Length: 518
Image (cartoon, rainbow, N blue to C red; front, top):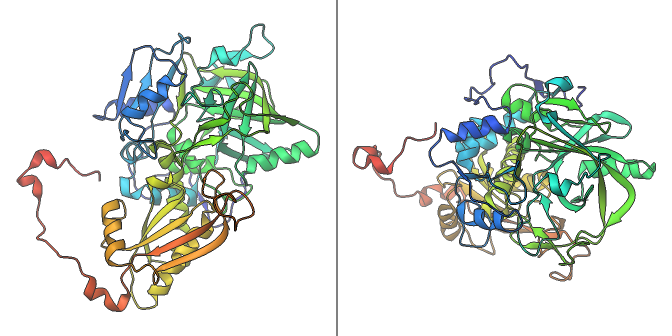
């Protein structure tokens, strides 16, 4: 497939070794990912107890492993497959596959603290997708056509609701693949909020700036529908790679190339059966459809709850009064398919959004300020989007200013980022207590805080509204803040932490110290 990309990005051929030497596991779809997790203690469980997809499934997993910004009590726990879904004898539902960095590390092959670096390398060393014959596509083993008598997607797929207030059942991990109406090779893939509205209709919510929405608007201006495929149950590399955003993946860049870069081999695509579009060949489930021109529905037209679903900031968003509609033309699946979902505010969203955020910031900071930024963490409290911790290593007095410049670069490269915390190299950026320690001892509020007001942020943050802040004119506008919790270079000797003797504690307490993830 032709691929638009800057010349600085090298294409990795499928038979080449991985550029960084990471031990990339043999995962190429959801089922091989599950088989890998089954070999890792504490990372995967199943239940045969009958479970209602309406509120009950998410309610259970809230306690098991949702984590993230979910209301306490919750925890980071194993991925979980529900094998007995009420009303759906042939379906299974998986939740939480990527709801911990440890699990993502096992699935992608890089150490926990290097996942952002791995994503950055995958963005630089891309592998474009390839087409395969329909006879070789597992996603089309079972076919349901909308023209068939009795077709009803509500009876075929067990779309869950997270809470009793949800506007309706949602597909929370539907990777939508669309293309420019005038250039079929200009492809975009993104995850969107998809609410089941009827037997063959879904509503789709687009956050501002999404490339598929630009395709939709272009098709709508011409009075034409936009053909799309909705792909569910995928190799986690595809989901995470798809979460890159502009400018790291500019308009015209196919994010499936990043998944190929992560695996060192191309993602396989297949032609859809009922619409002129392509689908992920090894998906568990594909919904084929068209986004209709000039058709809108209220998101909660069936429930009238006034609510949508729990979103990553931890709140249930309001139902949108006017959303585009996808008319479903066909559903194709594997035999005994696994519907993959997530709990909206959970740790799985942090992995999906946060690791690409880390990679984007790392790429641009290293390009502009080589050697200064050591690592980046998109913190769970911001759902992987709102809060970034940047670890820097100052080398001279000029780096005092360059450190703050790095924070500005981070805000520029990831539009939805709201707050940046800067810490020195002796601070563990993945340890919130250590970050807060740096804030208490290397930060003075009126000296080390930088405000950037009136900047575009994210519409799902309830504090980014004119009702909350009368100074802003539109929803999704906010003040962004940089917290410089680094010691001034000329005072570094005054801020040295107490150093203890280095030794191997496993000699004294081996059960408390498992082997590190190399």
